[in-house]
Image (cartoon, rainbow, N blue to C red):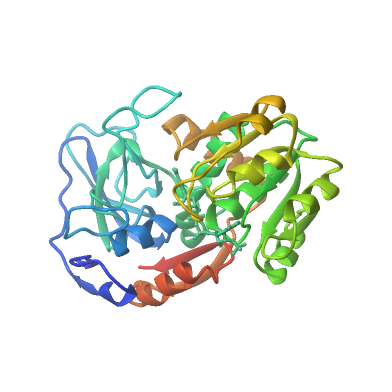
Length: 332
Ligand SMILES: NC(=O)c1ccc[n+]([C@@H]2O[C@H](COP(=O)([O-])OP(=O)(O)OC[C@H]3O[C@@H](n4cnc5c(N)ncnc54)[C@H](OP(=O)(O)O)[C@@H]3O)[C@@H](O)[C@H]2O)c1
């Protein structure tokens, strides 16, 4: 099969299409003929060696396609089924946190930048009928992360105000849709006026440019004193996020785009009775909840751009530069 096989880390041009053996479904597994894949910030970290993985490896956590073959003992999945892939591997049965063997698809396990993928049968779910393959491929990792952060961790309620940092991001745009569909008011931040305008078009009540002046004051003014929930994928912003919430508010954190280390002052957290909630990806139950929500709601993942798999290096360059708004999709 054709696949992007990462053999060395480095700049985007280390990503090239090569050939790899056709995968064969073992017991409990299926092989999916992928129709589309999508990028995540994690893919950039993997390609640069920031998130180390044994090489060679096929990157890619997100994909949608058609079941090509099924292994022994698989039930409930048939050849020809149109499916979307759950990128959590080995989460286990608990809802509080993943099991010790938890992995994210696409390093060290071969991922979705390929014509075919071999994957446990429980990791393929019916593709939401109203989504195209490109839209379905954009959904999994970002949608799952946003869903768990908002629904399972922050337990958002209709009428609450949610602040989403860095709205250009893939998870952030999913979070905007999920929070709006849950009846929340959404405020966003971005480095770009154009992205703030696009967020307002998608239903955000307002936005603040985080590169200009005191953006925390802007959020407080816009929210009448503080938001209920902050979705923080940036990391270095934790002190600001804590200052943005009303007393008793929640900050949900899952990323470190702005830096992996942060210094906090204790008092705003304790005096404000703020809950700082960590989250990662999501469980199979979270993914089922996301797919059920998508089936009943009308939003579609925000797609920044669609390219053929052969143009994966250009997609990586755009993602790394933060020029995108939403998800970068690769057709296969
Ligand atoms: N733990 C998990 O399970 C998990 C799952 C998914 C993602 N993540 C992490 O979450 C982060 C986002 O992932 P993604 O795939 O959505 O990334 P992405 O699509 O590359 O989005 C990154 C966005 O971050 C925003 N940003 C960067 N620096 C910022 C700052 N100082 N303040 C506010 N916003 C800032 C930018 O928004 P603007 O362009 O609007 O300025 C940028 O577009 C990454 O760090 C990723 O590793 C973690």
